[in-house]
Length: 157
Image 1 (cartoon, rainbow, N blue to C red):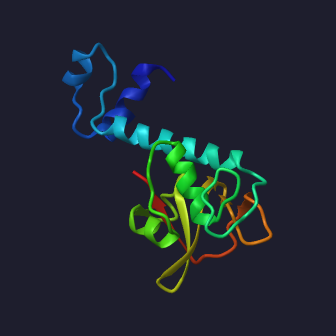
Image 2: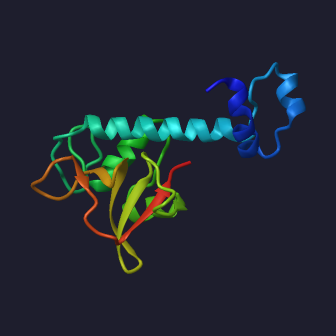
Image 3: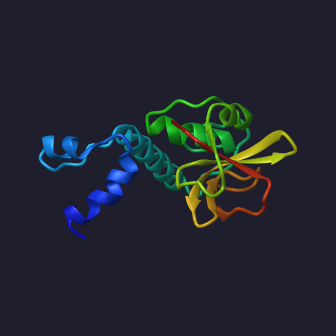
């Protein structure tokens, strides 16, 4: 696809960008807000890579790394390495994220497991219905399929 073929779809996504804006910058696409979205995506991607790099690390309640983790300790550690500070617990992390629907979820979003209104577990969405997480005592950080519909999604920004 050539750059000219992409302009109509990018213009539709840009909303406030105009043909004059495009012409003024020599045909480069300038989309307000896209840089922030791109940096958030790269932060989430980096956090996801950090979590994956901890595969096999033992679960330990209350641990925040770098060699042992509980669930929220893994997400806290992963996002800290990506340049973003999160609160300590899964429930606090849920309250600090931008909540998104299952349809809108993206790799790098946080997945919060809940019972009623209480959040009890968190992992990082890896795509294809799977998460990286530190499951429980006696287990290790691993990639696992989401096993329940009782989840909420949050995007770190």
